[in-house]
Image (tube, rainbow, N blue to C red):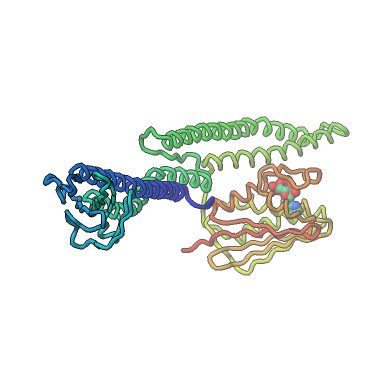
Length: 450
Ligand code: ADP
């Protein structure tokens, strides 16, 4: 039941309650109907039989029956029997069983459902100890026939009514829950597309569901506003930091170049210069991601030979790799053209290759290869370094995440930025890694087709 839609549940319970009410009403009608008919018939027969006795007297040795005694009155037949149970006056319906034994003081019902006859026998002393029996017979009354006809109609009509009510109920609930569908699809859209500008936007209405949708829309307004503020802050802050860092780098560079500073002071200047350079990279990554979030990061696309870019990056990486004696290889059989932003693609590849060196072991390897796979250029960057745990491979794409903070002197922004660049070009980046054995990054980008 838990898995069923609210529409179905409401219709189910509503129909069940209808069935119970209808069944109870029918049972009550049957019970009360029978009772009322029985009592009404009994009263009519008793009155008719009582009245008859007042017209019968025994005097002067013979029975005197007044002419006023009707043998048929308003559906009741009256028959009078002498003390030997011989019919002496009155009449009975033609289809009545004349041999029916007397049963005094209690009304009997005979015949079948189609044709019921109610019989009341009464014996009384009509004078001088002479006993006379009066039998009253009433055929099924008109009201009872009307009542049973009504019941038959009710037996057909009520179930039909239940079916119609269930159908109408279902359609009404479906209609009432239509806005909920709209709420769900908007929420899914926001969730899947990360599009906080989307609203549910139900038309005007005052019911609870419209109130809920409006409350959601207001919440989305607030959320969007605070997200925008946060993004603006990151973007403004990185922008503002760029100039002072550039000044620090330039000044440190000048001082180092002039050669006037020596010894301890020179080493301090070198540290300042390197730290400022790292911070500059961090700030530019932050700015790029902030602009990407705002949708302001533009790709300066052109048709480029991606294998040439990979070669260039492999050469740049090989220089950095010298210190750790890591052998960098590059393999590509053909030129593969893609429509992309050269500077960004170099940034993406460098971020991954430099990680291969940073987290590679001394005297290890870094193999870069490029090949075509259908409509995609596929670039593999494989190292035999420290590797990444399973938990780590899931989280390395998060901003500022570092598997082992003590071992990383980076910012945790390199991979998120690389992923953003690949996706902005319609591509993907994935990783496979094993702790202690190494990592394999795989980049796919759509090939430019003329
Ligand atoms: P960082 O600037 O810290 O390198 P990244 O976003 O480039 O930030 O990488 C996130 C984390 O992923 C790193 O801190 C490191 O722990 C892990 N990582 C990335 N590349 C590799 C690799 N080739 N081998 C092992 N660990 C890696």
